Length: 124
Length: 336
Image (cartoon, rainbow over all chains, first blue to last red; front, side):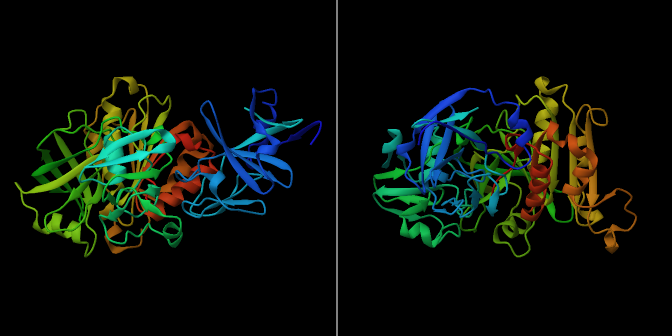
C-alpha cells in the first residue's frame, strides 16, 4: 500500500464529534504487514489496548477489550465485517463498533485510522 | 498449596484451599470476574499446564467451546497442584481492600418488605469493603455460596449488612429466612465487585434499583452522603417495584443528612392495577422509563449506578446507551 489513506470510522451517532478532533495525536500501532488479511492483532500503547483488523487490505482499530467483559476481540473469529468475542459469543461490526449480537450492548469504541506508507496509526 | 503462574505476565501466586480467581484477587491481582458463582463466564482462563477440579460441579457458565479450548472458570476452578495459566489481567479488577474468608454471626434481622429482609452480621475478623460491593454467603446446610451486596458502608468492616430478597423455593434464602437465628454463624467471603462508589467522579449521582438491587444502591447512597468530598453532589435514587407493597428504600434515605435537599428518592410501580397497588399515588412505569422521563438528554451528565433483576438492568443499560452515557459512567454487576 502506498501514499496516505484515511479511513474515518466511528460508532454511529458520534461522527460529528469525531470530525472536529481530526488534528489529534497520531499514535503508531504496527506495520501493515504485521496484520494478515482477514485477521487481527492486539497492540498495547500506553493506556490503550487495541485490536487492529485488516479487512481486505483496509485497516480498522477498536478497543481490544470487549465492552461487555474481559474478552479480547483480537482473539475472536472474524466473519465478513463482524468479529465475535470468544468469551460470551457477542459480536461487533468491525467498521462501526456497533453491536451485532448480544449479550454485548455497549458499542465498541472505534478509532480513526491513518495508514501512512507501510505503517498503521490511530488518531486520538 | 499450589503455585499458579501466568507466564505471559511473569506472575506467580499461591492458591491454598481456594479457587484460581479468588486467590489471585486476594494476592492483589486484577484477575477478571463478575458473578463469582460460576455463571457469567467473565473469569475464563486457559489452562496451559496442570489440572483443576470445580468447586461447583458443572458450573452453568461453562460452554462447549471452553472444553475444546481447555478453558475453565477461575471463580470455580480449584487447582490439583501447580498450574500454568493464561488470563487477561486488568487493573479494573484489582481490589482496593483484599477479599478475605471470614465468618459472620447474625446479630439482627428485620423485614424491609414482604419479601426483602435485612440481615446484619458481625464478622469474626473485620474486613473492609467499598460501598456497592458484594460478599459471598455460605448459609448453614446449603451447598455453595451465594453473592449478595451489602447495604451498609464498609470503612470499619466490623459488620456486613445485607438486604436480601427471598427467592421462592431457593435453598439459600430459605435457609436464611426460615432457619437462621440470632447468634447463628454463616461463612462470608469478600468483598468483591467493581460496581462501587467512584469517590473521584465529578458528577451528580443517579442510583437505579429494583428488587434486591436495593442493597448496593442504599450502600452507595449512604457512603456518598457521608463523604465530605461528595458534599456538593446531588443524589437521585429511583426504586421500582411491581406493586405498591414492593416499593422500599425511602426510609433508609430519610435518615441521611441532606434528604429532601440534595438527596431525593422516587418510588415507582409497574403494576398499578394490581389490588395491592390500591391507593398508590406515586410514579407509574419501569425504572428505566422513569429515569429517562426525569433526566432526558441530561442523563449523560450523571454517574449512574444500577442493580436489579436482569431484565431491569438490561432495559436500564439500553436507555443509558441511547442517552449517550459513556460506559465509564455506568456501574453495575455484569452477572450475565
